[in-house]
Image: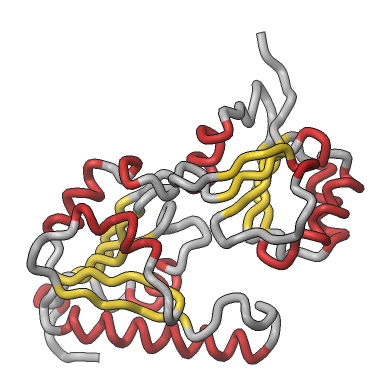
Length: 248
């Protein structure tokens, strides 16, 4: 770590971009992007960054871009030691690249899909850099909120309890959690769809659930979960199981 006082360092600014529709970027987020001198964003190697696609209309004319390219995403299971090692090394390298700019006294604006502190890669930068540098966080509209609106689906009534679940959990845990909550959002579908379908059927929520793919985006797809007969689910997809609780 540099011996320079922290006041000479730049700030890491995490900016939430919302669920995908560029018009759901907040006024504050648009301002921060427009004032940025360095914009960092995550992307899968060989593919265009979705975060950049959402935010690019707000980019200033002269800005340095800092792409952070995942070495793996869904190619190997998340609990494989090789996956953990690859991602840990990637996040360490990404933090070092950002830190180098911050130590030069330059701010870095890091784009974050959805909200920066909800299942976001920004959190891996935050935990690695927060003790060394000033970090600012601009909240974003959570992806699930965008999907609620896109599906025109009230999710929680009265005293309903909402549970957010990653589909990466094992089938028994998914079924148990789904059966004990009033409403649920299931994320990280990917290759977990057959397991999730079985768990939702066991929990008795499959018939009322809704599948949302790319909610709020131009190519969104929304259908009853029971009509989703294939097992293909892109990264930007989730399942909603609405509550049925107390109402006047």
